[in-house]
Amino acid sequence: MSSEQIRLDGDVALVTGAGRGIGRAHALELARRGARVVINDLGDPNPAEDVVGEIRAAGGEALAHHGSVADPAAAEELVTAARDTFGRVDVVVNNAGILRDAMFHKLDTAAWDDVLAVHLTGTKNVTAAAWPHLREQKYGRVVNTTSATGLFGNVGQANYGAAKAGLLGLTRNLAVEGRKAGILVNAISPMAATRMNAELLGDKADLLDPALIAPVVAYLASRDLTRTGQVLSCGGGHVSAVLLTVTRGITDPTLSAETVRDRLDEVFATEDAITPRHLGDEMGMFIEAIKEAAPVGTSTP
Image 1: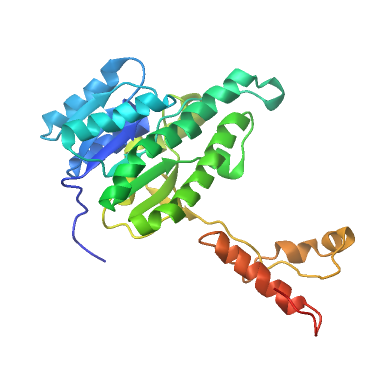
Image 2 (image 1 turned 90 degrees about the horizontal axis):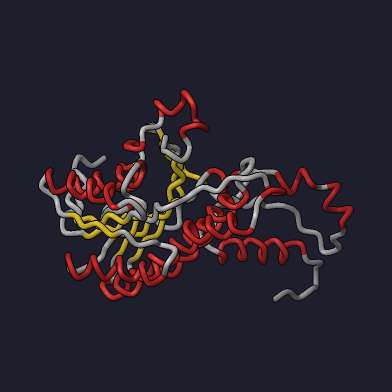
């Protein structure tokens, strides 16, 4: 275990939705560790400017940006502002989000589109604007924000859950594409008290200080990081890994619907399950199982 402190000196970090709550905590922690931070926050300019003021008062460097991540042009402006002011971009923390909760049978198209535009498309827009620069310098860290709703499901949040599940897919795919370019892409699934969930959490809110999410992001934004394509669930000082596993399942060259029904327990058995790093790992397991189950004398690809 190293005693050396994680530092971000010289790095430039973009944090979206950073005027309040979790995003503000991210920005302050990154700045405390030496990063120069661009604070993106839509709407009332005061919260973002206040965070910039806090960082500067502590001796750090920061800049505010007020565009919407759902607008590709504004995302480009965000990256351009960082490069014009600080000369580079090293870290992208995609945190901006909104809620438009409704039971699925009452969920209108506008509520669906608005949530996906900010969470999923907004993350794509900001990351896409930064991606060429990260590739050119052969270094980058991207931290996306998924959710337990997207990973495991919840009532009344089909739009939010779909967006957050989409972010898991985006994270996994960008991790594969970015690895050779030195870009590591991970996600957090945070549990923290914010304006958006205060009523839902009730008396549990006191246990879930947003400041206790920020250390996880600081590590995922650092040069100490070695893993990519992962999801860390975090909140209240607790950190755990969300793993995507695939069971060994069954293989039957004469497979029928009845076989699936009758052997379902075997399909779901977790003994010897694998945790694929990418599509190739799962495909390899499939091909191996199919070859082993093929009748003697049968040629397989």
